[in-house]
Length: 153
Image (spheres, rainbow, N blue to C red):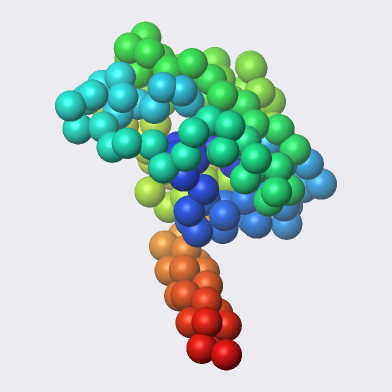
């Protein structure tokens, strides 16, 4: 299970999906709609990079088996990191493993981070894989280099 905003399937999101595919034969993306910023700070929310339909098509093209879109509202936003993990990840989804980006935050006030997620899911026997910024930057740079070299031919 890859967990995050997945609001535009940029290279960072693609790196998470590749990691998920390297760990399991089936990969699900779990995201929220509306996005947290749309609910908590609508005046600062950025426009979506893709429509939900476009996101679904890109997910399929990248080898994602399931796209799980959970509802997000102020009640979800008020959950502690422990409550969030228990309610959504353990009780509702029950993944074999979770993949997140290095800057993943969750729970009320974004109180939980990747170390918290590892600890909370370890108690349920669920492994967490964190894709760090270096991997994301390397992926972005290699894609840019490949694009430049293919464009110059």
